[in-house]
Image (cartoon, rainbow, N blue to C red; front, top):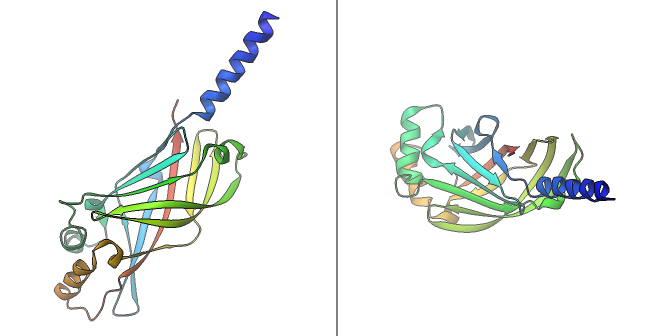
Length: 194
């Protein structure tokens, strides 16, 4: 009987430690990209090189994007976006928070994906805005979880006080227009700790 109780205690400990696991974002296997549109119909894809993130034991997820790591493929354009648009010395990060929930992670079978509409919040340029983020959550293995966008999340520069920065970029590049609306996509890979 004692052995049986010990076995049950061990299994409960294992289950609870699995349930309470935290997941760290793997920067090398993750990507946040966005598309800028200029001259009405010229689209260019960009991304950020430095991401940090965690899914806590309660299912709360947070991803921090270093705005100084913006990568447009052109050094001078990177510098202009950092300084004129993001003002990355004053506002170094964009932070996204949402709650994935532990139940969803627990019930996913290996290789299985689940569609999830996340209720999230974006902090950018000193402002905060609630967002709906349509995602797929995939349990790649017992130690790897992927969260990917189903469709682009549209971020509007005006919602975060970035419209003046957009105008500055437009002026310095002698462009007739740059869209304030920016589609953002992501692939986020999390590795379970422990």
